[in-house]
Length: 239
Image (cartoon, rainbow, N blue to C red; front, side, top):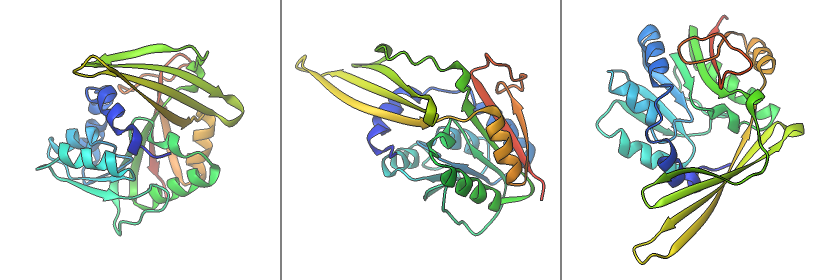
């Protein structure tokens, strides 16, 4: 899917999301830079790392998201690259490659997943680390009901979720209602399509690519349990 039509909505929803920032900053301090970020979006994580003195190479396929990211990181050591995580080539290796905030959930097929992981490994230094987070699919409760997601200035965002378990897909349908200066209501519809992963599926995937993975249930290293909202992975290149 393309994020070009979701860029404005994404900015409303996640401009202030910060749960993962310290986790990726600690990893960068431990492993050094430059850092390669896959699916860098609007530069939320890249800007955080760059403000701490690290160089970031930010790969993002969406022109609309990338434009916002370039504006948000102007003057910082962030190098933006138009590219797809499945087939990019940067001609160098990195001590740390990251894919924050469910970026890998836009890899819908086994071929997509294998291609993206192969590219990540190809760009890792020997002993380098690939880190990413995914939401825990055990907590999916998609009943199709329409709910208020949030209010952002003059905009109200509603959503309903459609679960397709046989395909391991979750579609989130958003309705964005905005009130204009004349009091008129404008409604936009956007759909987010995500392919989720189970714990042991990820473990097998990483091992097959020559990575030794470690799973945590939170950004502070909490043990993974069935009721934890996120799966936080750090995987070291072992060959």
